[in-house]
Amino acid sequence: MKRLGIVGFGQFGQLAAGVLRPHFDLLATDVASAAEAAARTLGVPFGSLSEAAAREVVVVAAPVGAMRDVFTAMAPHVKPGALVVDVGSVKMPPARWMTEILPAHADLVATHPLFGPQSAKGGLPGLRFVVCPVRGSRYEQVAAFGRFLGLKVTVTTPEEHDREMAYVQALTHLIGRSLVNIGIPDEHLKTPSYQHLLELCGLIGADSFELFTAIQTQNPFAEEVVTRFVDEARRLLTQVRAGL
Image (cartoon, rainbow, N blue to C red; front, side):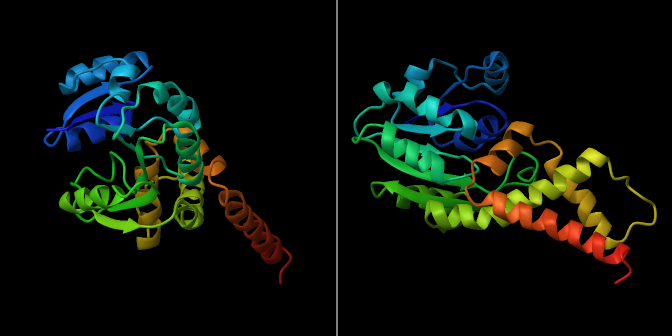
């Protein structure tokens, strides 16, 4: 089995380890103090960033806001012929940073699994996985592996991904987190539409604020979309209160 390093062992890094362990010789790394204990619990070997970055395949599951620094720390240790894959929720900034920082002798693929620990509880088949070529042709192998796992794979560009995610993710997470924050109750007289809102809260409520911040600030198209939504909500309320 190829040796694979997971750089970043938070919730998604741990999910990735469970999925990848049957197929790769894993080594995890993370600066968080709780990560080594989590790796021990899961039976995943834990090591230094330099050790993980020197593996044949490196999956970067660090928060998007930390990725530039992570790539900089990794760069001296990435071996010729290595494949580096990120799993961030936005794609244009990580793709640019990888190209600028990581050595030319590594192939680069930007990916976005459109699921997390909550939505993957029922298994991976049928869930969506986005693959964005950055450098080299091995994005085809990454896409094929995703299909092997039962994922619905879409190959696209980082820009097109982020344009769509401004609606699919930035807008959805703004609505969901707002509902979580106000604490909408599980009412007895709920309608099917209200049930969908409760389900949205259940999916998004466990996500970190760090992830929410990345989705809203790192996607270059997010601000325009969510601002339009907020402005339209205000306009509608003004209209009905004016009796029009």
